[in-house]
Image (spheres, rainbow, N blue to C red):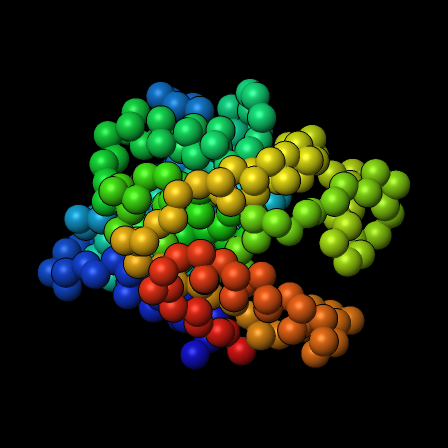
Length: 242
């Protein structure tokens, strides 16, 4: 199964939507009533919320969002505060703040639960916090190569090359990315201290392909955090994408 198809199938599995609902696309809305750029597509009893990873905006979902929406569910992608298209970010960029801003946005737009949360990379850390602190609002959680709560993403201020182990390049990195990185340890601590989400149906989707230059040993080491994330959600399914 192709990666996009596996992602779509996982979301649809968690959405449990009815076949009779018709997808109705909506245009991007920015700056009209809110702090975030939003794209809503489709309709249905549940809303699938797509949370991007570090450095990404809602555009990262432009290929997969219509495929999910076509299976009779409303989908919402958005750009976090501080990124191009949304208002400037105020305050810390930790899990509690970002989830608070998202929930306030949903309330302003009268988008009510239940939600199916989809989080990629660092966005997965934020969605873990959402699910663990507001489980009554969440009917499903899909984590795509999610950041672990104890991953310790380190800022290397003098780095001049990309992705050397756990050290992320900061040369020419936008302020908002540096801030999210610097606050990621606190964001992880907040997730770790949150209650267990025992009633949230969860799929942990992780790649089995080693990163460029990696070895089977490094890939096995990278897989352990994904196993631990799945263990944090009782009954979670860990699905591997080859």
